[in-house]
Length: 280
Length: 196
Image (tube, rainbow over all chains, first blue to last red; front, top):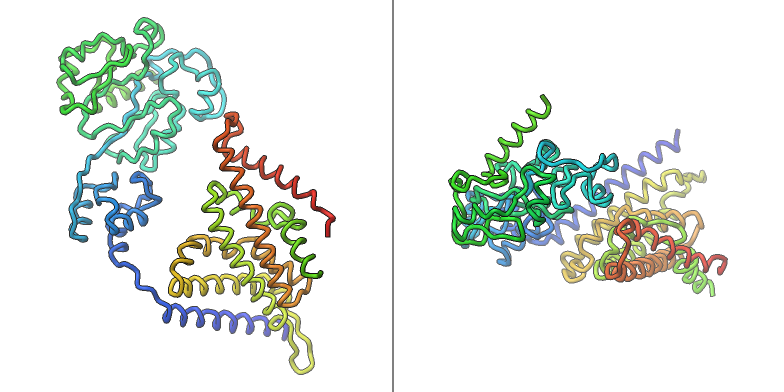
């Protein structure tokens, strides 16, 4: 009994003494930290996604206070947040160009034929290592949701074995861009309404054989909106660097024969419709 | 002679990482760059030396004492007390460093609190207690063990930097090749076994 009692007393005294010592030292050796860093950290979204290139929100706040980065460097912050930070620090907000990710492929189960049945690890990199994946297209979405798992904001959904981005949830941090083994995901300006949902530069005839919605390189979109599209082999792409991005009217005007030229909303709706058709 | 034996023994023969397999977490975690490995090494040597000194004193003078001619041994409190002492010590050192030497604080940076309850630091303390070393011997043992850890970590970090430039087969890339390298390094260190 005396043993237990001594142990309890010893530990209690020990803990109290150590605590007191630390408390005293913390008081006498206090270092004034920059209050602005804490303020900015509080204003930031604190998603710690690393989209700005820093290790986390606190790190980014430090860089902003030091003047290394503009408050607009955070891709997640809304315009209001950025201006609130700028106001708090009394500096310029800096240009914010918000971006969203798009998966440039429309090869879902309904339109792309599978060449083999893949039973391996449920991961895109693994699948692409096994004979180039189960789908016939060597450039298309593999459909094993590696990007959806990487997204910290839950903005990517798998519809019909195809990754689609919900742009209202996407903040443009770029995490998904790095994980896609096919490099299908692109960060595009948030006001890019129209995209070409195909990334394969293969010949049109070849693509037609295994994918109903592959770009055949007919250049109709380029004619409908002069100078707003670029062509890589047989694949069209919106020229995201152009001064003006094509508006949603170009989809109707160009009457894309394979249907891979879609608005973001149209893409989502089409994929949902196809999924419901398939399951029925 | 005794101290030479202690030095060679704890740096090479009974290397904390490669022979005792303690402190594997920072060994794998912060060995990607030589620069960060150096910061970590400095912090480990620092904390291990201090912690060994303090825990040895605690073990000797606080856990064993006489009350009215009756000897009381509280060895069963060892781990509890050691954790408390080491954590408090590191906290204290951090507070003082931040004020007194901001440069050193920045160099040791995040690594200091990270290794507070690292098993290598705990291991050094308990090994000292088990071997019933004096406070001076314990401090030296802690210091040399830290140097041994630093040696292993720096070797491994250099190897990993080289690995980054070489062509590694896809299925071995990343952690797997790192673990294989660590194994081979441990095998090389097993050559010192029985030396002292």
